[in-house]
Amino acid sequence: MDLQPTDDQAALVEMITTFAADRFPIETVRSFGNSDGFARTLWGELAALGTFGISVSEDLGGVGLNFIDAVLVHEALGAALCPGPIVAATLAAGLVNGVIDGSVVPCIIDLGSDGPLAVENFRSSDVLLVVDDAGVGIIESDNVSGTDVVHPTDPTTPITILASLPKTKSIGDAELAKRWRQRGSLLASAQLSGNSSGSTSLAVEYAKEREQFGRPIGSFQGLKHLLADSWIRTEVARSSVWAAGVTIDEPEVGSIDRAVAGSRLTAARAATENAKTCVQVHGGMGFTWEVDAHLFLKRAWVLETQFGSIDDAAEVVAHLYADR
Image (cartoon, rainbow, N blue to C red):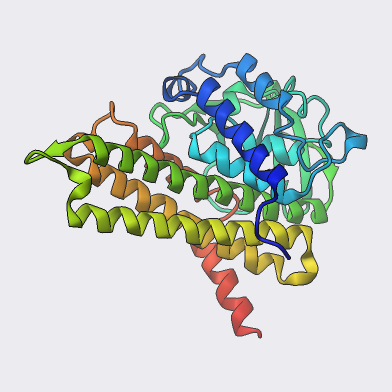
């Protein structure tokens, strides 16, 4: 079990980071929340990099790398707040035709939790994937009706409340559903880890530029401690997420359930706390719409609910340790 990224993995992350900075600047990220904001051209470019099929075998049209490589890619995309149903596409790649090349856009709903039938990015999707304890089903989005939420928690992640769920076509059994829930949770945690890094970078850059009493505010001891804490939370989250990714590739090294649940706990905390710190560093203007800090916090709130909550993850960890 090696947690040190290889040169190839470092190059992969650099490529994705550069692409996201060039093609998904914050203005573009914000536009994805508009009713007509989903850009299929950009989605296709993201797919062309092999993003969705990175851990899918070459026989199925994928890149043929390990799942840890998909984790690293999602972390880089999370740092850039890259929008769209990235987790859904990565899970469906190789199983649903057209997802790998970006010509088919999927969205996903997990029926493992109570509450309304809320689906992210539904209005831009071609197919809806439904996960429950019995398996995974699929239905064309045009055959499902719903109402868009006017003011979703994350303005860059549109939410639709479905009126009902028609009968779906099965594409996988309970074992696939379990695997999707594990991997979907970890990919969301990877984005949370990246999110924590992105908000920390934003806070640090502002602290270097903003001056008070003739000095950059980053030179003040109080802010140094806040930013150092953010960096530490990111490193802890990153280590936990990477460890879970390697565990999925090498299940003999430990419990996948514990590793995935642990990564959710550390990554969600890092993302939310670091985003709050970023808002605080920006002072009163940090609470305004124009400042990007709030986008990191709101995206973190959305991601931490994907494929299980923080409380669910804590229960998994507690029970697994109690059973040892």
